[in-house]
Length: 271
Ligand code: ADP
Image 1 (cartoon, rainbow, N blue to C red):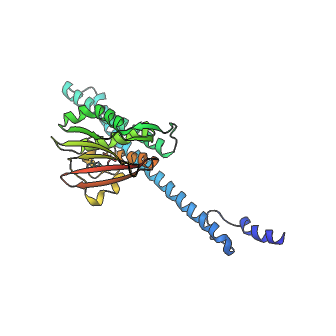
Image 2: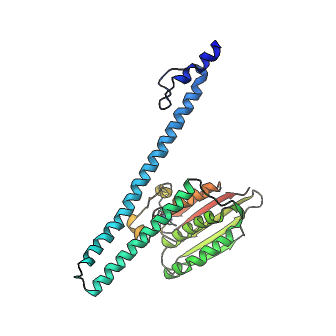
Image 3: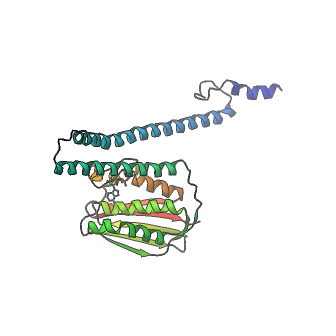
């Protein structure tokens, strides 16, 4: 009884917020260290969450301020027809921007909370890529960018909607950050020997400087903010790609040359 009392005694005094406040016997130290680590991770997560909320508020406030300003002028009724149309157009596009932003936030939070309700199932990356290409063809045509799909079927176990979002965002970027008369190639390779699947999207666009390659996956990070906004970007696309890849235990590789183009490769380890 004496021994068990000695063993359990420190537990009655440990402050879970600062477990190193009191000194404990040697064998208990890994336990207090573990609490310290967990607290650190919790704080980091909390900080990220706070930063995200601040960014979301800021991103929503900008279009709202603009909408409110134009509506206020229209409200006076002293605006000619041409200007009215122009202001209405701006209000419409700012609303579209807000809708895209809110949609991306919802997608990201669904991926974040691990609240994916759909089960993984047998899917073909090629079929999903074909679907996305069909949807994005008009956008590419408008920009005179050609889209090509080649390679294997890319049969794997995945959540269709999550993979769809991943493919959509990679292709959307490849078109958005391309040049007129450029190209986008989607290629799928099934590696029979290793069981890995390589899904790559190559573009002939503006490229990504080496020092930006890690940061572009951060939420709301854009290399050229005004360019991204002009193209309807939310700054969340690659965060969605990153989370979707992580959910499927896939890694992402980038190779790029500024002014020549970029290649994003998602490597799935088929299991
Ligand atoms: P956005 O909505 O701004 O496109 P993303 O998260 O999808 O946000 O991408 C972050 C940034 O990474 C973009 O603003 C752009 O600067 C850069 N980027 C992403 N994809 C490409 C690409 N294929 N070519 C060049 N730059 C890219």
